[in-house]
Image (cartoon, rainbow, N blue to C red; front, side, top):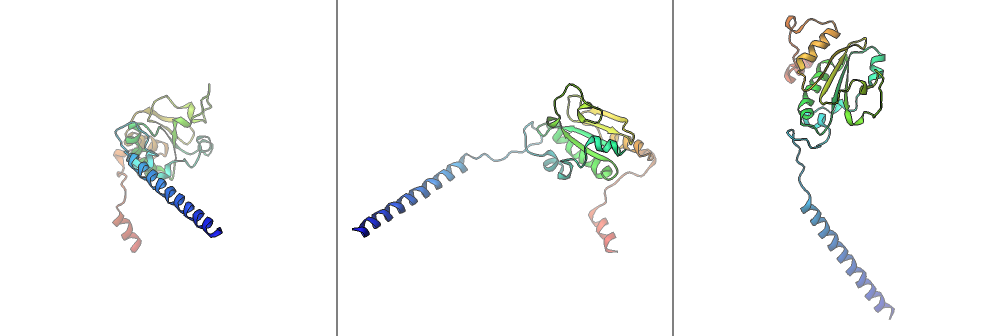
Length: 195
């Protein structure tokens, strides 16, 4: 009698396991059918993720290395860039912000600020990003070593205009009187390492 009950119980448990695995398989199939492909697009105002990683190939910009207050305290030139991740204009401008970091990232502090992270307050101190934010994105602000604002513009400010202000901040020759800044090609760099 015990063996018949055991056999019946064993078959019942096996049946439930089989039904449970079939239900789980069916559920997994239904979930896969309803999943929409990710459609990242530079020409829409849809959140795709971190714009610096996706559109500029540069994940080192976010989060910034230092705060604005710390950079100003250390008398470093600063490039402040206001953006949001779900703006077509900001997506298109991400590569320009990355280009600024490429040429000035070691000597100046590059600070991208997602405007959604700015705390809402009545007033801000000059050491807080909210003090400079105008309400539009993208927006760039360039500070010299003494904390004076050299450039504060909204829109897709050309790299050359930012470069001119950094040349002023670092007391460099104007672009017209100096060699153009150029990125080294990979082969040029690796051939120098081989010598």
